[in-house]
Length: 506
Ligand code: BES
Ligand code: MN
Ligand code: ZN
Image (cartoon, rainbow, N blue to C red; front, side, top):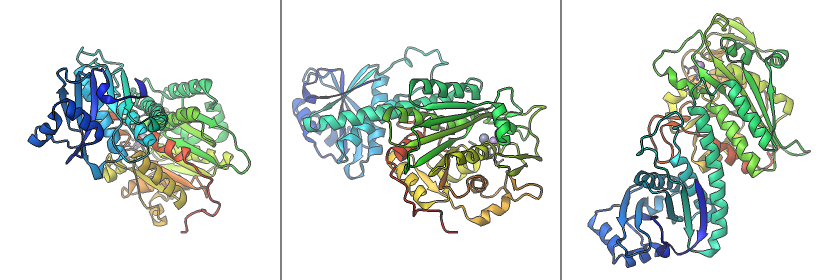
């Protein structure tokens, strides 16, 4: 989509359609007043009569019958003015663009929505909503003419010259970030047979060639040498070779922080020998959403160039049953030497993350954030609205929480009390990869905690949020891309981690 921000007077725009936002119990904004006047009070009448009640995301198409240079107006409800937020800007923007797309109109002109937040934030949210809302995964579909309609351009007209610069910057950022999130969606929506570990590694290498990001892919031999038997063990049942992808942006300068982002990359999770029921197993192509999220976050870093040293680790495997596959009851040693009783081969994410978390040590990181579709229990606990957050450091949890709120990719914290660790004690190994069936999301995190030592660390369980079962204003059914904007927010606003913010007291 071509996105333009320019100065102008909306009433004078000679275009196909202009999008105008209306508050419920409307405050007639100056922009609206000019349109209302040109239309002989038609907008006021519509509202007074109740023909259009501007509730959030409700739309009304109004032809202008030659009374205005624009052929049509799309009125869109913004809901209550005192409840209007940046996320609602995203929603409304997504809804408006999808509606226009349905009409078969290719170019949209829009007002900058009236919100008191900084103009940069508002135009960024508009761009995000538009790009995220128009996303479709249709590369395997022969589209009916009706489905092939596509909005090709969005022009945001700013009526106040002083706000033009900020609006431009915000829109450009929003577009870039949202496009990266859409690339994550593409990877996640792709079938397991397309988005294999090798394919993800190649995507990462492609990014490396185009940007200043250093990309390395560890071969199975190197992994063997490093003792990464979590990744190797899970990958053993598959015909697809496992890949351990390392992305590095910037370098460590004295006194600077290093942040490592780890993403679970199980390109298909059949469960292995502890095989999953066939019902909904097809969805397990989205088990690499963590890796897709981290990869896309690095796409953004390559463009926005934060002053930081960042490392991305993507352990990528396919979890399959076969004669060579790991068996329930096997004991493996992960990187660093800790032994794991693999009581259930379907709890594979934590095995590959164990190696990745152990691998972070060589960077002596300031902070580690892992993001993973780790447990079905998280879907039960939090549904599709919040990711589960657990960690060992309040300062880092606070930063992640704030980034999540800013991006409206919200996290909800679960406790990591020591007592929860009881359930993953093993009689034959250092730790067991499943608990007793209760608090599954937390026991998953307790397992990971064993591989991070004292480094400030946060684990994000995105099993629920990574996939949408139904359409939302700017997240269509399927892969959500959730996590990308949170990570970008976290890193772009990163301030030196205070030395005083050590580990939580136990
Ligand atoms: N990838 C799944 C978790 C998952 C489930 C993600 C549903 C998205 C939707 C993970 O590898 C898994 O199978 N976890 C098991 C763990 C259990 C065996 C301890 C689970 O949640 O059932
Ligand atoms: Mn599994
Ligand atoms: Zn899994």
